Length: 275
Ligand SMILES: Nc1ncnc2c1ncn2[C@@H]1O[C@H](COP(=O)(O)OP(=O)(O)OP(=O)(O)O)[C@@H](O)[C@H]1O
Image (cartoon, rainbow, N blue to C red):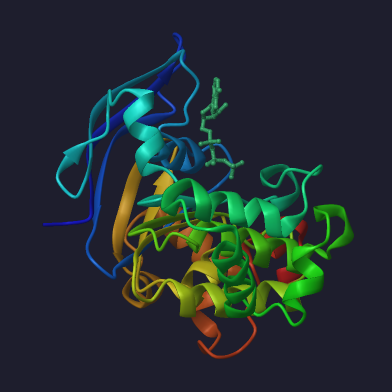
């Protein structure tokens, strides 16, 4: 059985054309799927639907199952037991995902306590342990800091620790490195690659170069639909859909060996990939 199974998922906001239009994909145990598409193609609403975090006026049809359990229409009370514990999400902008008024260690500790209800001392040890695992050099000091006292990379590491603290089975990453500079982006990608190895994950990005670094498989979204899905290297060397062809040709991604720095799709839009 797949960990995540999405079938004919359609998401509408009012009378506008569907934001997501009948998409299907699955993620098995220890499997990782990249979802790529331009802004507005429906990537974020797809992850929010899986997390049960869409606004109430969103109309959702189709099916999302997690370990065989239907999530579409699941009451909020039951969703709360899943979120953070069995399914968690890493967002693009850690500053909005972290509470600015609370020390970082306490925020991670609350996630641990919420689901395990352990004693204060052992929670603190677990928080420090997680900060170490995500590559924070001075766990004590960082645990004692407020989010605004951390660098962008440290904040993203803290958020990753928070998302993984309960060993969720499924992790959704929504543009987890977009807000970071290129060097930190690479470090965080490496960290995620390592930490997500034993879980099922979905990795959303507008950047095929980023997805190529961490995902064996990718689904390409355009205007709410999946227009192409398959092994990343296969799609890069032989894209079938005109949109994917354009995306790859414009970023010249097919001409760059995998282990070399890649021009990103964003560079293309700003004209730098042609320089
Ligand atoms: N709360 C909402 N109410 C109404 N429309 C929404 C809402 N959230 C998203 N949408 C619409 O759904 C569509 C898909 O948006 P989504 O955020 O999933 O795109 P995306 O591919 O993640 O883009 P980006 O890369 O910019 O985050 C867009 O047309 C957007 O305007």
